[in-house]
Image (cartoon, rainbow, N blue to C red):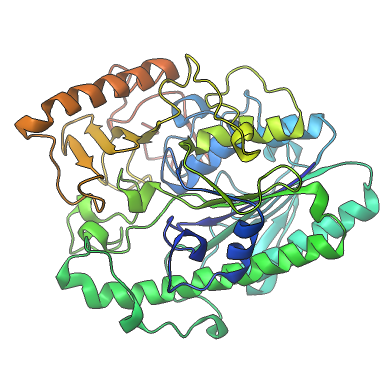
Length: 468
């Protein structure tokens, strides 16, 4: 079984027609959803760019893989998904944003990938960017980066069928939009009227006009990505690969888009604790789309409400491929859910996983940023969102989404909620203990971050900054 895993950057769960959005136009992804399964409870365990990618690469949380924040590199002494698949005979590739290191990408710098076409840096303004292809580059390629990267992905599949027709492939495609700046898209994808944007009630009135304009651009990016997804699905069909290819679509994390009054890191007029478009326990930040089309296996037009996180993707994809998982993975194989079967049994490493996910943020989002969303851990269950901060600079938070679906009323300090706080604290500790998370008692450095032996991806650039 081939794998095509496509993910955007900063696309929240609600920014997809298949998830009930009546405004954003995503016909190709909606069609893919109708042909497969929508996973309604997929969450980014660490809703930030590099930590998500490191979890997807290793199947381990940041305190086990070394990527506690942006700009760190994954440990090199642990197995990786592409390395495991490559050893099992797969032709492996990564195209687009890498965000876990810098080129050139020789054998020792590709973490098991046979082929990488990684954009230089983190993609600039999404037009006319340069790419490293393994050790070669950077070479400038003109055009909108998702279109350029889709060209590269189609070329990868064409060459694979020609040169390695007897082997399966595993291709990971990482698009940068709809991450801000939202206005960087081809004009043909525009046309959303800000007046038509249906704002959620957790956007402050003072930010409403700005938010509508921003979301209109954000949706334009999403429609542009949908167009590229259509090209990929068409290519699979033309290459006669669609029946032998499992296709996933997701995102690394969501985006507040002014919900709860959040801005962006560059908004210097705001307090640091509000200068984050992600990195919080809120639904807009951690809840992400997840579509899967597994021909002959996934029930057509189905939806799953089983809780799952980024941490489950590595063991689940290995399960799909029939490849033995290595020791040390911290998630569970939920491929049975994708086949329309029951969720697997919880294990001692995943306590409460059938109705909850473990969430976190571990640093300030960028090396020289003096403050940000804080160092917190949280649990999201079917009904509640709970989070607690290491230095108690915020929280604790407790939201009852059954009564408060927009998470606007923190009830953690109410007398009526005390039993729920106690229950959620027990759940939180069970996750900490099962995962070996050193959140409460681990060694910390001068910046107050956990010291797990992490290393900068660019040591020269950050030689004057402590890693912890």
